[in-house]
Image 1: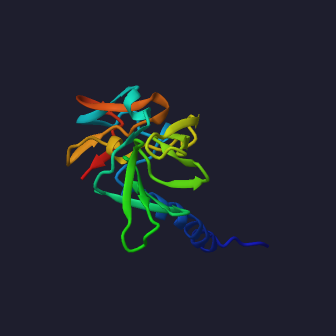
Image 2 (image 1 turned 30 degrees about the horizontal axis):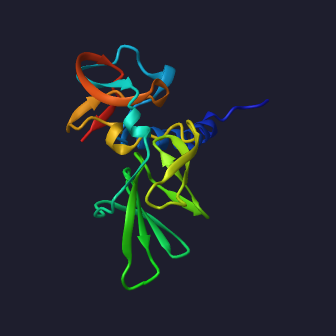
Amino acid sequence: MSTTKPLLVRPLYIRHSLPVLLLAFATTLSSCWGFYGDRNPPEYVVAEAYVPIYGYDAARYTITSRPAQPTVNAGKIYVWGNTLFQVEQFEGVHLIDYSDRKNPVKLGFIAIKGCADVTVKGDFLLTNNMQDLVTIDISNRSDAKEVSRVKGAFFAYIAPEFSKPDKHNVHYVCPDQSKGDVIGWKLEKKVKNAWCYNN
C-alpha cells in the first residue's frame, strides 16, 4: 500500500518559486515599476500623469561642426593618432589635438544629439545619433559630414533628457520608441497604466 507525502511537495514548490518572487520584488524597486504588456491590470488608473507627445524633431538628426567649446558633461574618450575624441554626453564629440600630451588643444566640436559612445577608424567617426548609427567623415576636422546612417540600430535607446518629464514626484507613461521621438509631455487626468514614476 503506497502513501503520499505532501510535506515533501510544499518545500519544492517554494524553492522553485523563490526566483520568481525575487524578480517581482526587484521590479517594484525600479522607476518603471509594475508588470508590462497583457499582465497589466486594465483597471489601473492614476489620478493624473504625464503622457509623452510623439513627433519628429529634425534638429536632433542634424550633425554639424562647431567651434571648440567647454566640456560640461564629459563622457567616453577615444584616441586615434594624435587626436583625442571626447564625448560630451548626449550632445556630441570634442576633437582635441593630443600631440602634446601636456598641453592638449581643442580643435572643434561635432554636435550629435544623443551621442553616448564613439569609435574612429581613419577618417571616419562612428557613433549613435539618438537611436541611429551614423558614420561621419572627419577628414576635414572643421567640416564633418555624415556619410551613412542606419536607422533604429539602437531601437530601445532614448536619450535620458527625453526619457521622462522634467518634473519630480510624478507618474508618467513610459515612452515607446516605436511611436516616434518624445518631443514633449502633457499632463492628463485619469491615465491608465502610467507605471513610471519620477522621484
